[in-house]
Image (cartoon, rainbow, N blue to C red; front, side, top):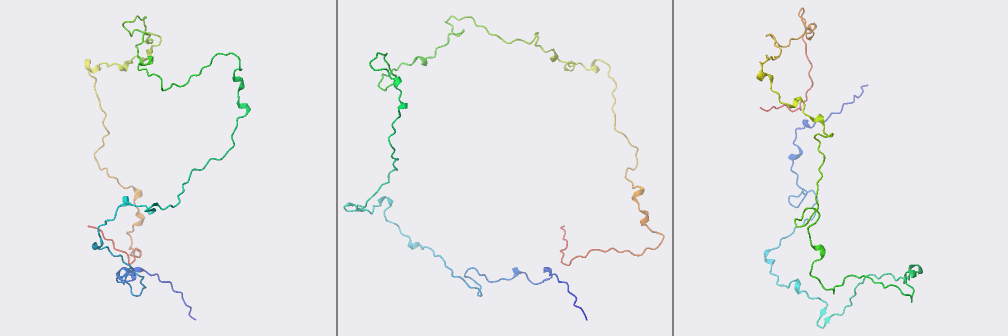
Length: 250
């Protein structure tokens, strides 16, 4: 009894189809009311008109400055009650009387005894007489200390300078110039000049400098010249018929 051999599913390749693509078909639109698809339900469409020029006219009505309150009648206001909101009142607290410890009776002089008069200094009032003369601290007098005033006798003034380092124990003798600081005359100026020699690079004999392959670079076992060799073939790779050919520029 023959057995059914399962067939391998055929992979569909889009390149095998030779028909037109989806972009080649022009189906009627389903949007709008013009050239609408007759097989589809169309929703109601509305359009906005435009304002014709003859509708425009010049407005002669009064402006906002001529607004009249509608509550005013020929006899005055219409008498509608009006209310205003005040701020929130403070909480009603009991009067806080100071305790006995807040008083200082020891600071009060005993009544009936003699004591020195006491005065208090208050702030300057505005009723005082204004003196136009400047105060003593407004004058800038030259100082009389030193020799700055030519018409005032002054004591002698001396200036103390710092200690010099030259000749003292602070002088650093290591800071003297070394032999390299002096510009000595070159010996070749006033004496016989010594011979000078220069070293050149290594020279090579003329010849072939190309790189030659060594014995290990050759494969003589792969060459057969003593017998007839059968033909040899090489296997390539399968190329798809849908591969785009290489198009080189130029």
